[in-house]
Length: 373
Image 1 (cartoon, rainbow, N blue to C red):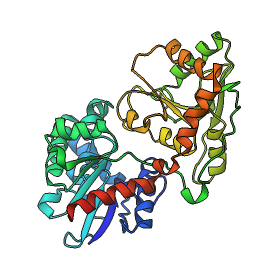
Image 2: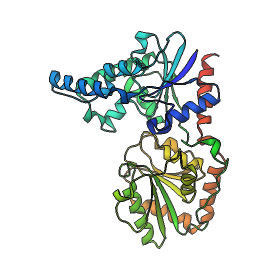
Image 3: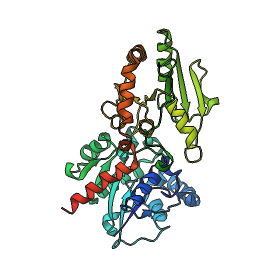
Image 4: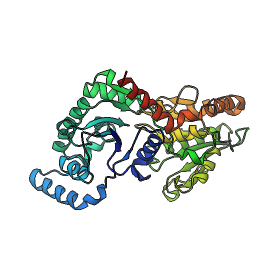
């Protein structure tokens, strides 16, 4: 049996879906667990997308959601040759392969969010016509019933499998993702570069979608720290510096391509004391895992899948709606007693393997091995 990764895109391309399929697939290949990934090219379906949107608009008065339609899925999957008798799939998209039960495909799903969560929590439903949305949700439910395993990157996703789709708990697993970093190019332990006395206190931020991911709130935290006479710098990696607000504590780093400029990315992260992800909604939070892999503790909002990116004693979680002053007060305690911060950092640096895709594959192998017992 051949085992392949599939997603709306090409897992062999590092730029597909925030790098996740690429690093998952490569780790699986190293371990002999995965044979490769299906090179699907949604960009080749632009003409079909245009025609489908026009046809749907004329027929129903609605449009949007081509990527959830059976037409798109069949056209996309038709780009590759597969054999249900010899091929098994681990899919990052709940509608691929198309109609697996009817076509005899063996499939498991590894998701950061279900369609229900994407439509409702992320607001994607606004851009998908109601009939397409309803059909997609019904097909997703059928796919989940047919699947061998339903694996969420977080407890948040796992709860959706069970509560929104009535899946049996024994079919559901939680395997947090790993850091999207080339392990062969990293030292086992990354030495910190941030000031040992936490002066200035450097807070790291990663993400192009800087508003949803909480950079404005982080700047409020910086203001609160400055009012407490704590010199603070916020390293922002990812956003266009020209798009960011003016702020005395902000240190824009711009976009850093981890594929071509990994040393620069590592250097920027290890120059911070804490990675920060104060998102309003977040299915997982790979940026937290990357900080932890590089030996930097993290702060985050207790929302969505973020708690699964902050293992015990590797960082701090705050309830949604927490005031910036409350976060600042917790950080002041580190500055007043840097040994407390160093203890936190040491716990992170003791377990680098925990934050790798190799660890993810080990957990997948355990799940598959249980099937054979």
